[in-house]
Amino acid sequence: MIFKNAEYHFVFVNYSGIQNYSHMDFSNLNAIYINCTLKKSPQESHTSTLMNVSKEILRKENVSFEEIRFIDHDVASGVYPDMTEYGWETDEWPQLYKKIIAADILIIGTPIWLGEKSSETQKLIERLYAMSGKVNDKGQYVFYGKVGGCIITGNEDGIKHCAMGILYSLQHVGYSIPPQADCGWIGKVGPGPSYGDQVWNDEKLNTPVGFDSDFTNRNTTFMTYNLLHLASMLKRNDGYSNYGNSREQWNNGERWNFENPEYR
Image 1 (cartoon, rainbow, N blue to C red):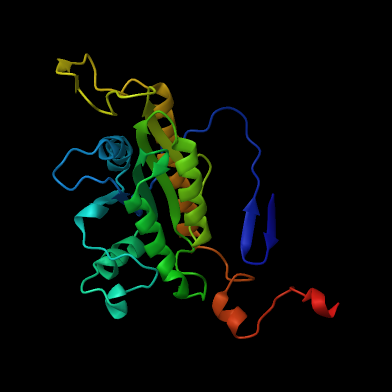
Image 2 (cartoon, rainbow, N blue to C red):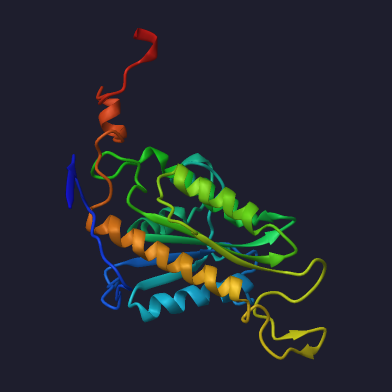
């Protein structure tokens, strides 16, 4: 059964039994992981260790990807595309932005500090917001058609709180968020080993911390595949129709079926 509405075709198929999805092909997608750890390279990042779980799935699905450690780059603070135009001597954001906008999927990784995402994560979000003035070739906000998720590590608590802020910010600037687009691992209350640690208090641990967490492994897998599914659907459809959501057309006077309540 096929329903046609505007530019979209909705196909409903009745079937029974289990579908074989071995034919799924994500090889035309590419992803970028931005690790917002507070540790410069080559220091160990527990967030990067959990990112590796997701990256291994992409590798097996033939999806190209890159990881950037945000703190390794001289990115200025601010909410403009190039802060050298506003008093900063250097700003690597314009170069990083080229990589971000070229990716179908953006995955932000952050540790938890004092129950919050890292300061590097907040800086990244502010610089993504700095691109709000740009539009794509359909006149939509520039991140339309892109997909976002997040990976979080820490001790005690804060995964859902941090994910809530990150995913809200991503959708606000135009990213699409699939179901279960976050994953993470947290340790027990108080000082303790972090994700992937193999030694604690000078004692070797039987297995790397967190690797045996079914909750973390399941959510990381679901997040990764949901990002792939949504990115694939959007890419096949060339993103979203610009009917009703083009900033460029709005600025030119188009209002579609909007009626100003002041004149009713």
